[in-house]
Length: 182
Image (cartoon, rainbow, N blue to C red; front, top):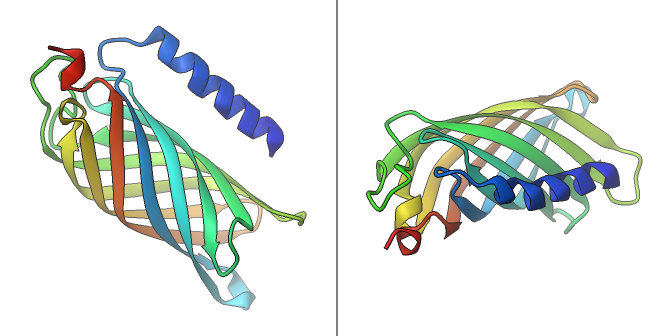
């Protein structure tokens, strides 16, 4: 787990150094409700918080890397690192100029995750597909809200299906906003 986190941190520090026109950067905060199907053990649910860094790659594509930590039933017990790529379906999310991209959009994402539990040998890793039916805002405006994101994934190590929902996620842009073009 430590090696994966070190590689993620190194990537997040180095990636902005080669920033191209479309490489806007944002910090995201949100909450996630997760449901995991464990076969004979039934369904487990929990509330989690997410923190990620998003980097724009092209006018339609962005990458996110972050951490999801458990809040209930026990705080910070289970942590998940993830990396995902999202594509804007309804138009340009960024124009790399002072002209804003599409203010209302839909994102489809594909990603991978690694999960570890504090003081336990439990590990999980897998892939997921997600859709965010509504995003409001763009990099130029300096913020964006992602509404009703739904993930469905598969944990290859534990042979289980995972479904998660995020009612609201906030993106706060630190690069690529209107301040960078005026």
